[in-house]
Amino acid sequence: MNEDRLDRIEQKLDKLTEVIVVIARVEEKMAANNSRLESLEKRAEKNEEVVSDLKDTVRDNTGVVKFADKSFWIVVGLVGSVIAWVLKTNTGV
Image 1 (cartoon, rainbow, N blue to C red):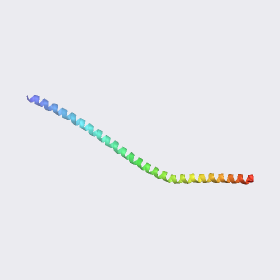
Image 2: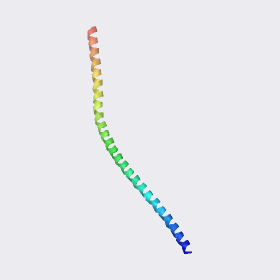
Image 3: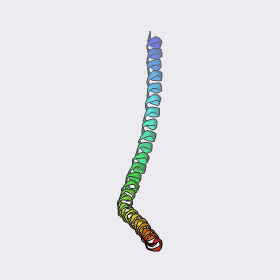
């Protein structure tokens, strides 16, 4: 009877050992996942900084583009007016 009891205790200890090994593996996976998550968070923060910098650059460039667009159309209008004036004065009308 004692041997049966010892066998059952050994079996239970073996199962307990297996469970502890499984728990250790799960903890290792969790640690690896936490490390990856921290890495992803750092990359996301860097991307947020880059996007913020790009937003500032775009805002600055928007003013320049608006000025260049208006200047272009002013020059086109001026050239068209000069051409019309030259054609009018040359035709004698």
